[in-house]
Length: 309
Image (cartoon, rainbow, N blue to C red; front, side, top):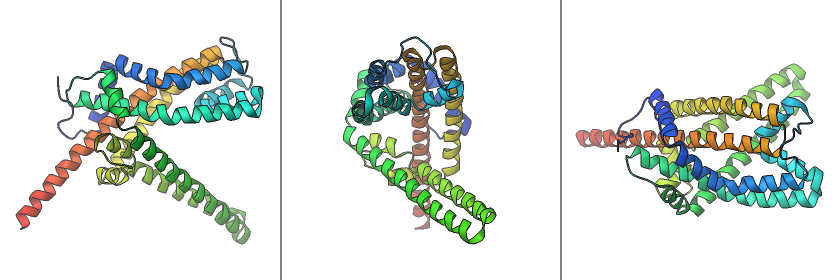
């Protein structure tokens, strides 16, 4: 098999490799995600059915736009449906089961795609069972590292906006509405920029935990993205734009034709599986590109150090 990751790639080559792998290996990668994410989706369909949601009929009471928003945040939409029709007890039970299940299946599903894609990039034979087994061999480090980063970024977001609210209120009180609003906007932009910077610098933690046997992998990710911040951020932006366009088209058609029915949710979940597949393949290509560049940089530094001595 052809080895696809033997040298650093350009921006366009990363995208091209991502599309090529996603297309050529779509069926087995899709099946891996469907098997691992299936229990969570089935749980959602079960609670929707128990809440009285129709299987086929259109049930978008809030109109087309609200239906799109509900589909973009399916967990919140399902929770609202369950809470409205099954009461607080049903809502708590749903939140508990779905949260625990999501904490398990999402990291394993993503890691399985990463393992499979790595085999493709290295020109090695692979199978679905091998990819899933590779993911579960790093179960606790992956779950723990993902939870830790979520807490760090979530806590930073909460504290940042708490500070923003306090400082914005003080600015309004002392400087007036105009300057206060301007100061609040500046602080909000700085906060979002700081979070985007940290999220990008730590973005490779997940693959580092899978392949380099470290946890939580934040320092490894920081090292991998050294001198590659803007290209890494740019690739993530392009991937998310592509994903949002694809998601909007599929979910727009789903809402228009099927509304908030269970069948409509199934179509939405299929689109989520497809976009997750594409994103994780792209993420893996990015990781190995950064690793190749990082190792080349280390070699150059070693040679330079040897010459100086």
